[in-house]
Image 1: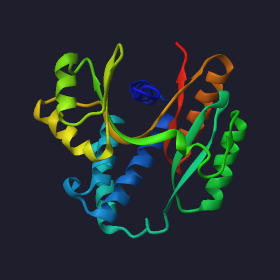
Image 2 (image 1 turned 60 degrees about the vertical axis):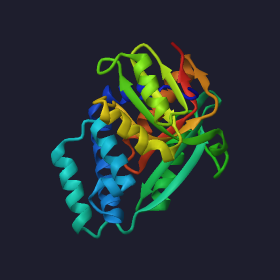
Image 3 (image 1 turned 60 degrees about the horizontal axis):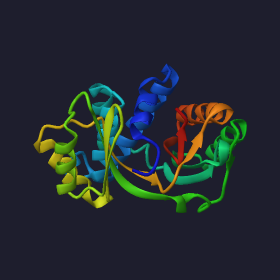
Image 4 (image 1 turned 135 degrees about the horizontal axis):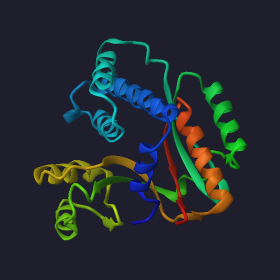
Length: 242
């Protein structure tokens, strides 16, 4: 499968420091609140909420935080000033990055993100500078500890409409068109196959391999972006050298 390993990203997030984990909880809770406000509290008819709840599960957000975010979305009005923006830029080693932003102050966010990029060996670009390198895809990750029959999983995924299937030492990755998300999710659930991650994300067509100083700079750049409250998602075309 094209693009860097989603499983590697999951493991990096699980090993993140307390500040990053706290920021992730805040971001996911905000996304749940806005999803509920826009489309109601039933994930069956609200894809945005379904994806936010899936992200909450994979990031170990507590039920208390999830329920609080849902109730806030049902009753609060303080999310109306948030706007969604996509930022694009370049990271260390010629890598490309796309950011999903959710902010109530565009000027503050632009200044913060530009500073983060510059500080860690990258630069913020214009809209469209790297987005052509990515395609929106549904991506599912299955931990081999939960299900290790590669042939069976591949057959289930392909029968449900998957476009690509990839295996590494620890996990399987299933890639599909975004419109096939529900079909694959249902097919996996019917077989009681638990996913470590299920999302609609941006997958790069090709990747840049980072090692040494470039890899260290990218790690620090990603950590800084993860800690920023306004950055909801980060997509990149990088892979870290083994």
